[in-house]
Length: 236
Image (cartoon, rainbow, N blue to C red; front, side, top):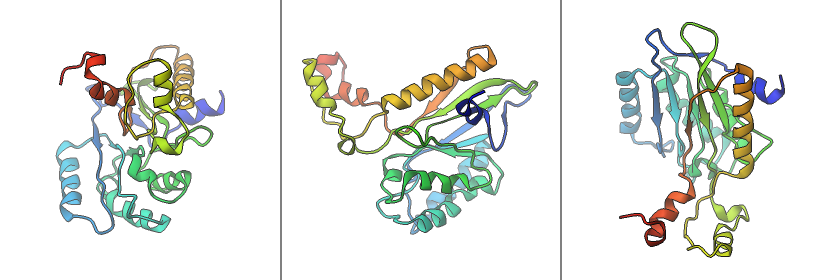
């Protein structure tokens, strides 16, 4: 078993379907708060979790306003507040980064390691490929010690201007309409990490495994369709 497979199979807190074959995931996205936060936001998160009683909470990006939070300490103080709805109830939770999480002027690895310090945070990260919050969280059957389902996270990164990836230039070479999207994309090495990790897990389990993938910024093709309805035959 290679190191990538070992890391992908390992969880700080085991996830399992219940005896009725159910597993509830609550996704909270775009909290976009600061240390000077609106009390209604935190109250609302507590209320949603109390009502839905999820088995897992996914923070789907823009988990804070990274244009305001500047330091590791500020991020830690912020997460002390906004992880409390899960930590106090002992509910496993994980996160992917959105563009505003990347905006914090702290190394992305350091940032995600701050998340991972929390007892019930089961986030993972990659360090050898583009992006940081790339992970898989296996869920086991209720009645046997085998993987039934996979939860995937992919880092959709930040601004395309910072990567030297000239999407419009390449589209123009294909003689197709351009687009104006300024957001980054999921990079090829991330896709290969997903592909190889999925193959490794399925070969290890000797079966296909269904899953769901969480990311913050939609693939640029969504914007491309909206901006080029005549070419893409999309109706507004």
